Length: 148
Image (cartoon, rainbow, N blue to C red; front, side, top):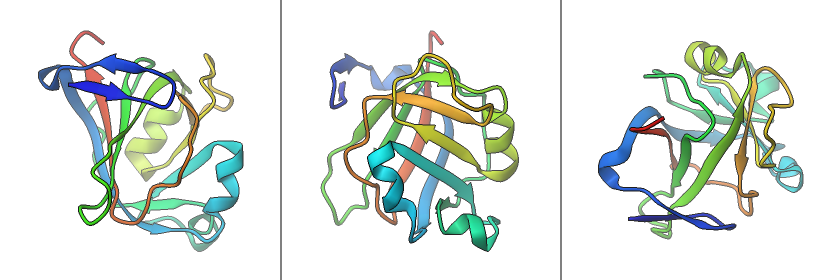
């Protein structure tokens, strides 16, 4: 299969993908669309406090199977009633605290900026840029490749 991003295509064999994290978006905070022009999505588990829910994509993920690293892949799969197009993004940087925050709180700040260094310890960067917000019911998966 070929995974397409807005910027380029890269080949990924289905058997190469190793699932590291899986979640379904349950709720989208009312302020989340304000972050789209800045290319930032904030993910948080279901235990997020009210003030963070306003700016977060709340999801049901609970287990980080193995740490995410640069080179891993983020995939959004929309709910079945929407387009079957998958959105793929490649991690370019992962902050020092990103994996522990994701494992403990379901919290990850994703910058769609292709940076080679994470801007904050709890953040990660991916490429290409974000063009549309995922919707409620979207499956969010983080994959490693066998050779990562």
